Length: 275
Image 1 (cartoon, helix red, strand yellow):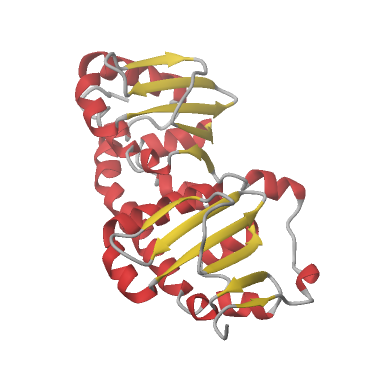
Image 2: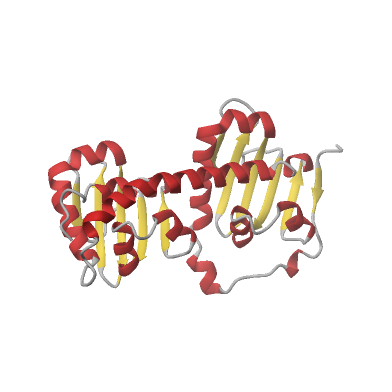
C-alpha cells in the first residue's frame, strides 16, 4: 500500500544520548506529558480529530507506549497494549520525545536524522505537529491559570525571609485540612504524596471520606519529589509548579492532572498562614 510503508533510517544508532543520571532524572516525564496530551484532547478533541483523522501509537523506549486516537468522535489518549492497532506507529527514545514536546526537535528532521522510526501512514507523521502544538497550548494555559492562585498564596508568605521550611508549611496545611478538608477534597479528588528531599515525607489524602495529612509514605495517585527550598518557593508562589517540573526541579510520578490542582492546596493556606 502506498501509504503504509515501514521506514527506518540506518543511521539511528548515531543518535545523541544523555547520561544515565540524566535518563533516571527525567524517567517519569514522558508519561506525565502524555497525561497533558490527554488533557488537551479532552479540551479540543473534535478539532484535532478533524485535522488528524488517524490513530497514532507512540512507543517510547524505556517509558512505555501510548495510543492517541484522533480518528473519530472526541478523541482519546491512553496507555497502549500490544493488541492495539494504529494507522501510524512512532518509535523513539524518551529524551527525543521530550525534545519534541519542548519544541527543540522537529519530528520530520528527527526522522531524517534517524532519531525516530516510523511505521505505517507517513501522511499522519506530517500531522504530528498539530498534536504537539495543542499539547503545548494546553500546558501553557494550565500554567498561566495557576498563577493567580499562586500569587494570592504569596501575599501572607512575604514576611518570611528566613527560616521557613516545608515542615512549617505542612504543619499549617494539616490545620487547614482538619478544618476545610472536605471542601478541598471536592476540588482535588486525589491523594498526593510529597517527598521533600532532606526534609521528610507527607501524604495528603483529599480523596477519602476523611481527608487527612499524615507524615510518612502511603499509596498515592501522584508522588511529587522536590527539594525543600523549591517546595517552599512553590508554596509561597515564587516558583510555578509546572515551570519547576519542566526545568527538572520537581519530579512527578502518577496523575499529572493532580499537579495542576496544587494551587488549590496552597491557596487554602492563605487565611491560615501568618508566615
